Image 1 (cartoon, rainbow, N blue to C red):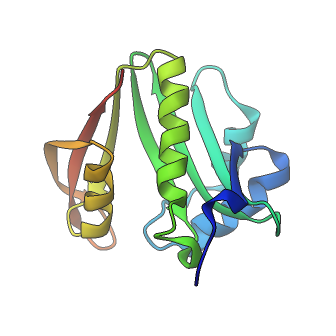
Image 2 (cartoon, rainbow, N blue to C red):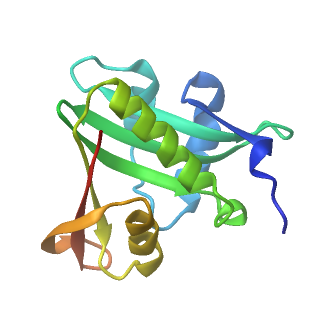
Length: 158
């Protein structure tokens, strides 16, 4: 499938695109599956837990095709979830989401961005390394179902 990256746009998560966000998160095995209240909290923007929630939306179809959520605890931030619908993976959607997130984090003067990834997820590890993340730690048995170690990664921001 050929995909033109100019045919999608990155925008903040809102009520209009929340259902598409949830649909992707529930379908992707590697994405965390949160409660409905947790998803609603992303659009209700609790100021005590500042988050940046972005979606990639197919301009023609109006469908959400990807998302990223980061918790901002200045001067640091942590990616809580990122996902791209299977049919749009490896077409630059994840990279564009991360670029938009990093721009917003720089605007908010964050200095570092952290994440955890399953040790067996070679595709994700390669993706994060291509963005400049470096391995900074290891958490044994961090994930459940199946039990697996986490690789901690960090990106220094400008």
